[in-house]
Length: 157
Figure: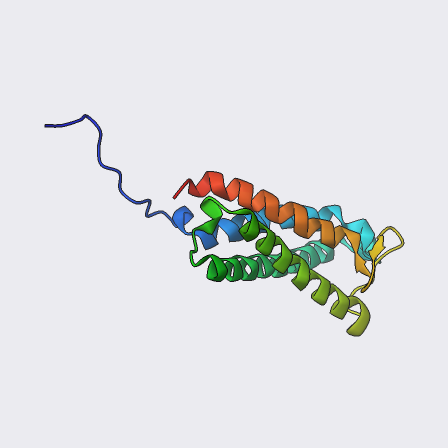
C-alpha cells in the first residue's frame, strides 16, 4: 500500500553541512561590509583598486575564521552542529558574543599594538578599548543575517 509520497532522504549536498553554509554566507556578507567601511580606515580610500581588493579579501577571510570559530564554540555549547537550524536565544547570543570578543581583541591588537591599520576620522570609537564602531556593528548585523539566511538554506532539523 502506497501513500503516494516518496520517503525523504537526508540532504547529502555540501549545503547541508552547516559550516559550509556559515562560511559561504559569512564570506559574502562580510566582503560587502569590508568594502562599505573602507572610508573608516586611514588610507584605504586612497589605495589603488587591486590593493584595496586584496586587503578587503584578506580581512574577509579573517572574518570567516571568526564566524566559524563562533559557530563551533556555539555548537560545542549546544552539543549540536545543527543549532543554526533552529537557534535558541542563548545560542544566537553566544554566536554574536564570540564574534564581538574576537573582533575587540583583534582590532585592539592591530590598531594599538602592531599598528597594522589605523582608523580614519570617520570611525567612531567605542570605549574601553577604542574599538571602531563599524566592526562592532558588523559583528552584530552580519552574524544575525548569517543565522537568518542559514536557517533558510539548512531548513529545520
